[in-house]
Every structure is written in structure tokens, then in C-alpha cells.
Length: 230
Image (tube, rainbow, N blue to C red; front, side, top):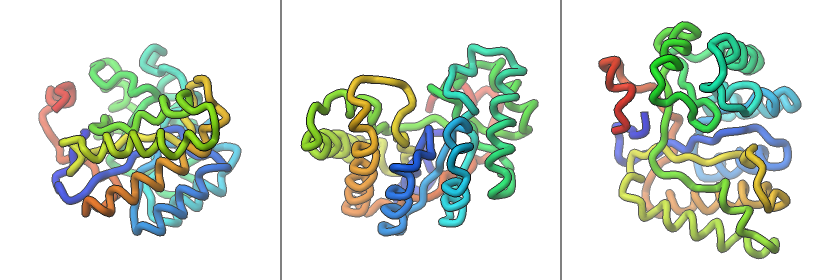
């Protein structure tokens, strides 16, 4: 899934959450713009701040497991994949009912077109759906381009303007992160990039007349369509 049926909406999806120095500001920005988002949370981060998981749910956002450790689970065996997802979901389930159907995005979007991964996930949660994306904020590349704090705003604005011009944006599934876990230079700017990017993105979507909504489950489809990137 990477397109919504309503072209007047978008779905902001946020991987790698929640971080204590950015998540509260993101939630406040979403509230300010009457926007909703879908968070794919990493267990290794969520376990340290369960109150942020609860607050995210309380404010009406969707929360799904992004695994426990941020590793290529598609390169691991089925037992490790299920164990990572189940461990993370058990943590999230303390704060909301387990969704059904379950939406899945593994770290690095691993296994999107891998039949073994689809079968393994179906054995874990029957009917679960893997979520791809269309427009990407490319936020993992922003902080490495920043050498000074004042670089953050223009670098984020450049990516938002590119994204707003993307023809896939109406009805699109947007990818961003809460401080991308993968280590790159410029890590000291990650918190500022995450918050600034969310602010500029929401402002831009508002100007474009696009509402940010919780990512819905897709309608059931033929099994082979799961591997067609349409």
C-alpha cells in the first residue's frame, strides 16, 4: 500500500519513534494542524518512554510495531522476525488494542517483495498488510548536510518544497522518521531536523488543501498484487 483512495488526503507515516526530545513537539504540531499520523515504533526506543506511546494513542494517532531492534529482519530467520514484532507489539498493546488488520513496515522496508516474509508475517497476524510509501521526506539525508544550526531550516524547506511538487502527493503515503536510527554524520542536528521538517510539512500540506489522516487498511486484493509496486 502506498496510495490512499481519497486524493484530498495524505498519510504521514513516521518510522523509528518515539524519541523523548522530539516526539512531544511532533504531537503538538499535529494537534495544531488538526492532523493525524501513523507511527511505526521501534521497541528499543518505545520501551524507555512508554508514556509517549500512551500519549500518541490518546491523541488519536495510529501505532504499529517497527520491530524491536532496527535491523534487517528480512535477512533474519522467521523466528527472529516474529519474535521482534511480537515483542514490540506486546509493549504497544499495553496502550491500545492490537489492530486488525495489522499494518507492517519492517526496518528499511525489508521484505516488501519477499514471499517468505509475507508468509511469515501472515503466520504472525493473518491478514496483515505491508505498507510502502510514495513521496519521501528523505530526512535521513538532511542532517548530514547541516554543519550549523541555521542550516536546518533551509535544508528542511528544500525537501518539503520538493515533496509538495511530487505528483504522487495527493492521496500519497509520506515517509519520515523520528530521528532516523541509522547513524550518519550530523547526528547532533537530528532533533531539530525532525521537528522543523514536521512543522514545514504540515504548513505545506495545509496550503495545498491536503488533510493528513491515519493510514487506513487497504481493501483485500489478490495475493499477487502484494508484490506489484503500483
